[in-house]
Length: 356
Ligand SMILES: Cc1ncc(COP(=O)(O)O)c(C=O)c1O
Image (tube, rainbow, N blue to C red; front, side):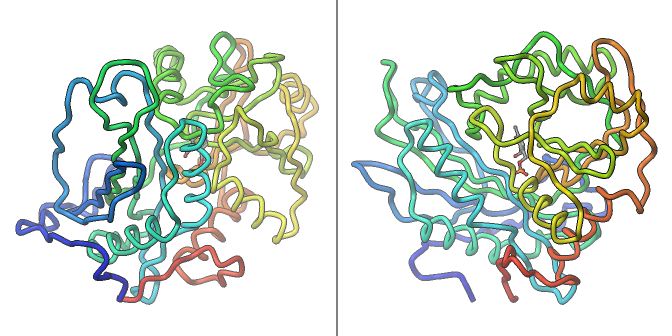
């Protein structure tokens, strides 16, 4: 039993659980019954409370709305084969949350507070964790400057919230992506490696243009040389060329994806050769021409492992072989899923298990 006396819990009187069609889960529209809330005032984080999910009241002068001090995380919990719930890699998500907060001048919250509130919320809303394959409970911790005033400044007050929602697959089909030729997502020295809200808002315009051209996503290139692939939308990106799994190295312009890290660990453990190195669009073209390009895919909490079917480089479409259960990316994805649901050993202690 994780629910603790340290957290004040106000249970909903009107659960919305019976309204949810768990056989038709879309991504991002269904929210579970409760949320965690904590406020930062007078130099410290106050105790967490759990309350029914609902609207919050904010002032038009709230600093986050004007100057963008907003940081978030995206995590998942899974229903295991024995009926328990596993939460995936809490510590790694917490570390990234702290790094993002530091970059955005937001005061850190202790691991104990984050971990305890998260586990209590998942336990309370455990009935919302879907059990069907490919479905999971998406968890959204976030923090924003809640201070009310309009001068440009680092805020002195913040609000931390965690809400969750059951989700199905993020992408239904293999993706068509284009190497973005004009716009850049992140520059060295900027905020690209922080999971801060502005990075996403800034990426919408080029994404919208790409969607109009029929693409699902863009592959961002670096802002210094305009040559090297960095990542894609809400995913890190991988290529398999001549039997080597290649992914761009982490930098201050790439998000340190938890799925990326997990995928690399599993791939190495399964005997695949993995290289974290710079890879340019030119190298992709050459490997297509030499017929040694095997797979391309994105990794992310939402999408898990999303195969790429077509890459457009400088206006030309390059088509990849169809993915099958035998594709390397799909075998590693299955291994990741098996660990999460408890049908493969969790050798790296990634799961936090809540026994019900
Ligand atoms: C910009 C960006 N890159 C990569 C990722 C993948 O990270 P993760 O695997 O931790 O979800 C995400 C999603 O969080 C993202 O928003």
